[in-house]
Amino acid sequence: MDRLTSAARLMIVSDLDHTMVDHHDSENLSLLRFNALWEANYRDNSLLVFSTGRSPTLYKELRKEKPMLTPDITIMSVGTEITYGNAMVPDDGWETFLNNKWDRKIVTEETSKFPELSLQSETEQRPHKVSFYVQKEKAQDIMKTLSKRLEERGLDVKIIYSGGMDLDILPQGAGKGQALAYLLKKLKSEGKLPNNTLACGDSGNDAELFSIPDVYGVMVANAQEELLQWHAANAKNNPKVIHASERCAAGIIQAIGHFKLGPSTSPRDVTDLSDCKMDNFVPAYEVVKFYLFFEKWRRGEIEHSEHYLSNLKAVCRPSGTFVHPSGVEKSLQECVTSFGTCHADKQGKQYRVWVDQVLPSQVGSDSWLVSFKKWELSVLDQHSSGAAPFVSCLPSTCNEWIKCEDRRCCITTVLLSSKNKTVADGLTWTHVHQTWLHGDAPSDSATWFF
Image (cartoon, rainbow, N blue to C red; front, side):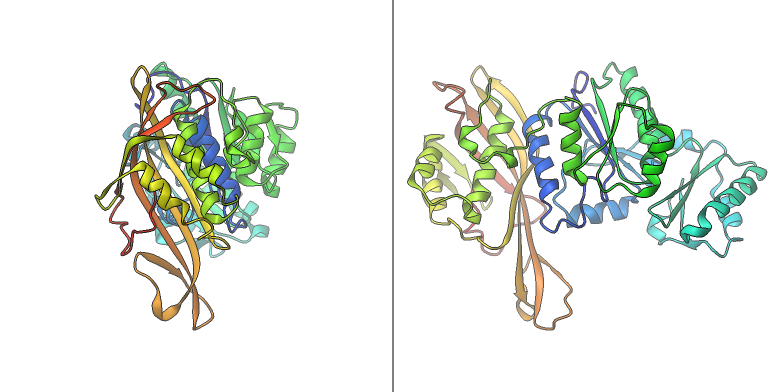
């Protein structure tokens, strides 16, 4: 949160599974649409918070599987763990607060007396969370009896049932709603209370998010029955909480527009990126737009035209340089020429490009230094005996073919200039420098452009 020196323009607090992440969307289009919107318009002055029932272990697994952005704050284990930044630094004050009237040993003792409860995996058992599976028809009776027994043992706990099968036992002060309330109080004490906050969810453990005063809420179109029932009983007449008509991340984008919280048209939804009309120079938008063109060109979604290549050369300074992740330095103009030869080389493949943590910093009256992570993902069929290195391969029932994910990232720094340019012209790219992230260098990096 130290990244912002003043109040966030918008804080989005979103559940992950079936809210931000649509597991039925094989190409992750709604998530990628949100990513482009956030990085182009919100990243540098807003806060992104992921609030998930997943433990840190399962959260990190999801990040490896899906093209997710890096949040500013992560709330995990159903609101029992709060961490900050890339390093996921834990909030010690929150942990201390949760220790009140909580004894994990007693919870374990009492729950062992219920054979209907089946422990979830060890990764999901956390210091302030004990998690089980239980059949839907037995859940309510068990919750009522167990709550009484734990109270008799001197504990003050909260039992949350969600997803039609998950039962979590937490300290009474925990939960997604309380974690959000804690964050808002902390931000207010620092003079950084967000101008607007939007909570997003799909299941029972998200209901608390919509109970926090002065917070907008969206239940995505695919919200589960338990959350819809809660809404009907508790928030039916609350104009600040809506049931979107769009699934998952698309529903979040819809809510941004519905509540007029800021721009709600994703750059991915703009047919002709060259027609984007801006009132001012927006370096982050320029970066997002550039890499969307990059993806569309290689997927063959735009025609092979000298017009596009000429426009690309026009935004690159003739003397501009590109430092390839391998360390080789080239001219930007040479890179554009090479790029022209790879039109539609990813056609018919699940090839995607996205940028993360796009943070511009003005370094002169007409120049900006923009840092970000550039990701590329290719999903291809690969013969099981010849899977390429640096590629994660998915199991297949077929002995010959498996699906392989080639996913790479580089840390990128770009110097942009508005010298002798109008807003309609766009910014000039004068220097690009990239380095591989975490040893992501491929054995053949010849097709890595910009």
